[in-house]
Image 1 (cartoon, helix red, strand yellow):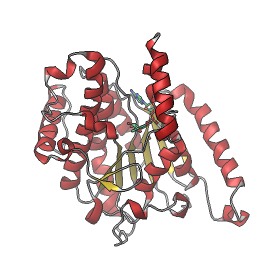
Image 2 (cartoon, protein in one colour):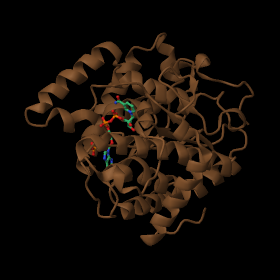
Image 3 (tube, rainbow, N blue to C red):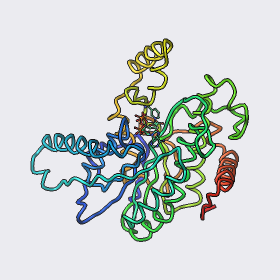
Length: 346
Ligand SMILES: NC(=O)c1ccc[n+]([C@@H]2O[C@H](COP(=O)([O-])OP(=O)(O)OC[C@H]3O[C@@H](n4cnc5c(N)ncnc54)[C@H](OP(=O)(O)O)[C@@H]3O)[C@@H](O)[C@H]2O)c1
């Protein structure tokens, strides 16, 4: 069972101190969405170095073999630097696998879960990392705004579909930490205003500005959902994290590539990064601290939100409001039902 020491961020240890697994003896399986770039890439790299069996869930299958080679090469370079070199005998690389999934297509998520269940019996770690930011209002084939679907509805569905396997893992491995679900939130969830309503037509007015509001709404809904799950599923640890501002990722490409005004955004993001930015690898370190720290437990930490320093933090009032959280839950289940998607856990 998990260690009893309550942890918060101040005690956030170096990721090197987390256990390095031998996948032949201790097979721990992780899924990460959007592991092919930015923070996700470095999260995968370090999980791989720690011996995890990783499923990189993404829509770019043709890139996966190139990605796998790049990750392996980087991992080997890091291993060369281990001091002392004897560490190589006790540290093993994990395994890299691809799981086809497009967050803008709910059926592809259901198929991905089926494919995963066919390949694995257990799941120890799910990292909901993939997202888009502040895109213009666009409807997906499932008839949701692209941002709401990618950043909230899709992680919701993926997690809900994986709950049975996460629970089974908890039952089968009572002597190790409870399985975890990590949701990469953002301090941008604070853009969601007090009159929080997922279906309000106001969310879709003044597209250019309200796109940031929609981002805040999607990220707030993500926090709601994790809080609700933490109450309903005590066998699994649900955590949200703001990884910090990694401005060198692909997240802001839409804004920096706009004609003319994109230059202004580029200058703004660069200046912002100069003062407050971190690298993608530093962002991944924060994610790994919540993903692997054995001192975070379901008893002490379930449903909590961590800031970029790894400290336990209070999300916005809207995100902390459990009435809103319940409303988000009911709204989402109903919307999925209307699209013919039934969830066993409602
Ligand atoms: N970077 C920051 O400053 C910052 C700040 C706060 C929070 N965060 C959070 O950190 C996480 C990672 O951000 P990042 O900066 O590393 O982003 P990023 O470099 O843009 O990576 C986003 C990932 O999401 C994937 N993705 C987007 N749409 C998808 C879809 N429809 N289906 C499958 N995958 C899709 C992308 O895959 P493709 O390559 O296929 O597009 C990519 O791998 C996000 O959840 C973000 O909210 C980041």
